[in-house]
Image (cartoon, rainbow, N blue to C red):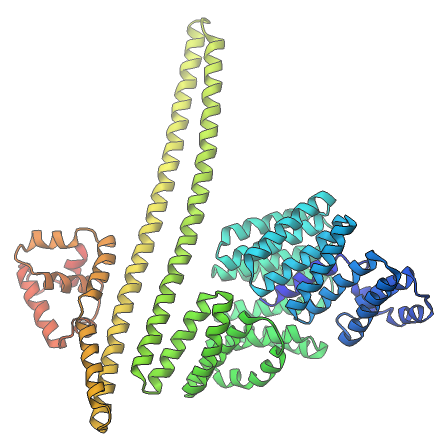
Length: 619
């Protein structure tokens, strides 16, 4: 969410000498001091205060003061000044979203800080490098830099910055889909920030926690955390952050189908952005509003914001954000019947998505292209795009499930090691106790027996707990396999439906043209062969066998003369596919499936009033 950019910048500006808000009311007096100041280190301090005062209000003045500070520091050969103004130059480029330039400026500040052996300056510059890389989607590099920042902050005892850095590490874990790890980082952050006087930092952590809950689709929890953040920002009279929290609340209300409340919150944030000329907030609110309009099928509203969004995104380095916006516009143009524009937009989306390695946006773009090609009467390209969408979707599903299973395994292994250590300590204690009590007599023997009994009982409890965890893990994997089976079944149904539609379209085209009829006939023949291929059945059979083990054996026990084709039909019926869907997958007429189903029922000697689907469900 765009609010994270705003929160990131607060981590950077924290290192400046005095908060920006204090200087906005003193800009005139600062300018008066600046005009009278001699060209020495005191003027450098005044220039830095002016930069903080004008950073949001006047970008042109801000850049002029930064350049003058660099020039004066160079002239005075004042290394601390060069370090400070290169850092402020990074803040300027980051604020106005020139991320490559920001990274170069922060690197210069860091190199000077290393030369000065100033750990605080190293930490602030490295934090700037980290948030720039995070915003650009370089997660591994950002994580490495934030981890190095933590080491420096621990050495300087900077608890507040440690808490904020945990927020950023949580953001990285969230982007990777490691939501439990993200929550752990945010818990650490809150534990640190609760001890600090700056309450808005606690609100930032609640805000980040709400983002994680949104990713997990825990909408009620997300709404509660966004509301907590909003309340704290309100108490701190922090209107920009209140507006960002309103965007979060609007998004979660929309997901919960509370559409009036959602649009109200989002328009509040947009109105504030327009009043304050805050373009980052305006773009964030517009994007979230477009998501809301797509859910409520108000596609004209999406297209109405296109020109303004293009103005706001011009010159920005955020490929991921642009790809997301373009997918929104593609959805709207698709609904409005303009497939050519959809193809143009998704070309750009695919480029941006591949550059940022975002498989979700990439998958959505290919699905939109498939629909556009189908609408344009280009069946081959439609099928190719749909296959790309399906392959990416499957890999995304597998990736998410692997992440969840990996988190379970890490947690399970950690708890197992802790139990082993606990058991070992208990065995050592028991051994020492037996040596101490040896020869004491019957009372000692009873005590030892009692301890042994207690130990065995505890061990049994631990073994039972371990068994329950293993059982839960197996159940989780089985649920995953069931979802894979359902996904594969839907894929086969959609694929065969699409092939049937393509064949019909091609036959219609063949009737109306004499050009390329031979090639069209070949494509129709290829599609028929693809539809009749056993490869699809083998893939389905593999997934089906993992969930419904020995299904074919059980059928043969009940009807020894059952054929392989009848077993295939029974499997499709067990997956609750319709007669039409099965006919499409087997490349036969629906009447043929009805007759085969009747013969199969007789083969099991079932009465006419017996529900055949219920019978297969019990197998």
